[in-house]
Image (cartoon, rainbow, N blue to C red; front, side, top):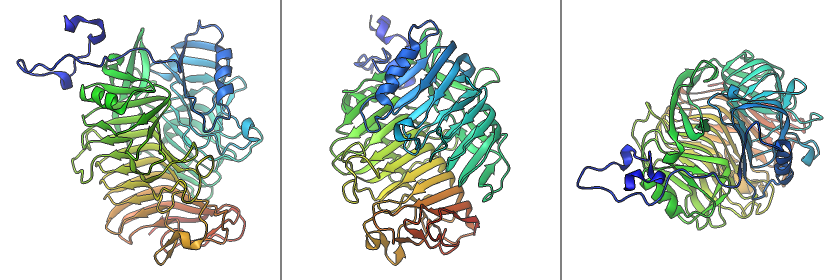
Length: 576
């Protein structure tokens, strides 16, 4: 009788099977279920769509550190006359297998009116899996960090700057097709991966492209374009879609030497799972329940909201999916690590935010245990649109935010941020010494944003690591030179490759300083690496923002110093 119960239908997976005579008890936790009140699903026939979009935007437009979380999902079909303005902690997405299955005749807009035309704080929002036909021919997407634009088809141009061309500091595009021109205008930096564009207008400091059809040619530093023909390894983010009336999660396959979008040529390549194989989590659930679901062989779908954890979520099974909707946020309350992954193949972590709690956590996210050494080259773990924050929304502390121990892990778009504004912010108040620590070999980072840590922002100990695009600001709030002194070296590098590393490569890496508490602070360099033939960097820059602090060198003892109040990068095209 149990096997025929509707809630359990279709749930059998290899992980839950047991030999006859050792039958497991029936699952205590069901898979599937509704997506909760903060997932708002529209069909073309839904009345009042614009009014609902406006209602959510009104709540979220300036709620930078608020508790609202929303996912706006559009069923396949055509929609007309909409302007979906996207505020904080809001995701908009189509529910087709291809972006062209869901067409918005209108706009999906991010602008900066709430912040007087300054787009540098337009964080934590996303657009995914939609086709857009902009009203005036160009869609505005003026975002900063942690605001991915994935699997989108813009049938027109894309403007990445705010109205009035105010300051902007973004951003990330992947698996998208923009038929017309992309105009970054005032955007300081941007990374575009595995996409197709009509053309690209300009660059300010650091524009990086890998696997992009139509990208401008390599020309760093003038214009500041770093262009790789392909992306070495990529695997697109999992996404929710509708198969008839059934929700499923699509898992795109791994690509090597990738170029262009994954969709548009028939059925996308990959596999899918029914929602019945997911534990659909709601805010208020305990970490123990999430771990029970995982132990039963279920995947996790985190619906929008805030989840307090008194112990780590433990992902111990190969090919587990942990997918967040609407910036679902994990907060460890008692100094715990929010999430730990075993040294197994093919885990996919995507689409959630980890907020440090008031009690110091040694780590916030661990991919693989210390000493992990298994070969995952055939089926790597991916960490995509997983963002980490220490302070800003309230008191938070963590010694090291993200630790990557498993080999071959792909970190595809993260923003790891020790807050420089908001609540609970101060040199010791939201103490966080290290941002990202990579111990595993053969790790690839595509779109690495790490900012404001008290010591090293990135430390890389693994062999054969690669980073395509890095954006960093050193901590603004250092009280004086002594506070950042690193032995005999002035300041901690933003990106430090350990002396034991013999092979490492990076393309398009930038570090900026803005020591506004003590503008006399000097940072020796942005980058530090061993002088080894296998350690190579391409297209590095450091910038002093308005002369608030200065860099003496770019990498090691190489590169010109920044100087004066002119915000002009000092660059190194090739190291060594």
